[in-house]
Amino acid sequence: MKKAAYSHLAAAVLTVFALPVAADPRVPDRQAQYEMASAYETGGGVEQDDQRAVKLYLKAARKGHAGAQAHLGMMYHEGRGVKENAKAAVSWYRKAAAQGNGDAQNNLGRMYFYGYGVAQDYKQAFGWFRQAAGNGHGTAQKNLAYMYAHGTGVEQDMKQAAYWYEQAAKQGLAEAQTEIGFFYDEGRGVEADVEKAALWYTQAADLGSAVAQYNLGHMYLEGRGVVRNVEKAHALFRQSCSSGDEDACKLVSAMPDN
Image 1 (cartoon, rainbow, N blue to C red):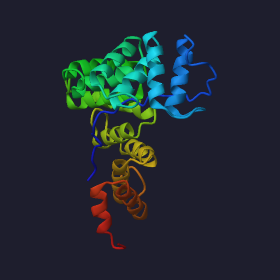
Image 2: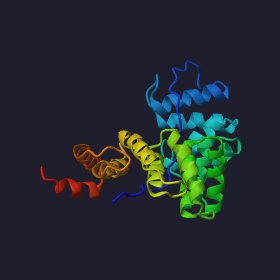
Image 3: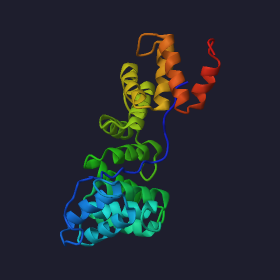
Image 4: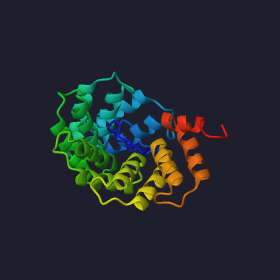
């Protein structure tokens, strides 16, 4: 039995440039402060130090550096180098989001979705995901697709869900690849196409998606969208089990060679 990979909304992974910054961290240039903060956050060329990173991000953020504001929001959100503070995280995400920072827009959407540091508001969450998704932010595209698929904060629209999952899938997000594979497999929001489903499942499976490995295993077992190959199916079920899928583990335990 194939299954979707619906799960929690994903946070943006903020890109950090671990540059060998030679500038004195006390200099007033906000870009130099941001780069030095990034170096301290990652340990790139200096000893890793989240507290020093926060101090430097704060200096650059106060001068309006959107990247620093987004990183500072994440540091407050995760309690790294500073005491965890969801309201402070929201405040900094909002400042960066207003400047068009996609990571901050996505993360602000998540804060509204879950009610972290703000009152839970699905419509606000949808709005921020839509802004970031429209600017090409892959994680936000996947989150927006989730909202459309579940009718959360917006009227359910499986065509829009399929569209945004596919956009995110093209950016290499394994969960989105699994979802669009499922949509093609089931004909949800798109015309059913088992060959396309198999292609998307394959990409996600190669990236380690347990659900994609499980679904692709069934396609090989049944010969849907691919040439039937029981050996390949069993190998995929084993991979899926190793990746933590309980249904795959049940199949593996029932295999003749186990």
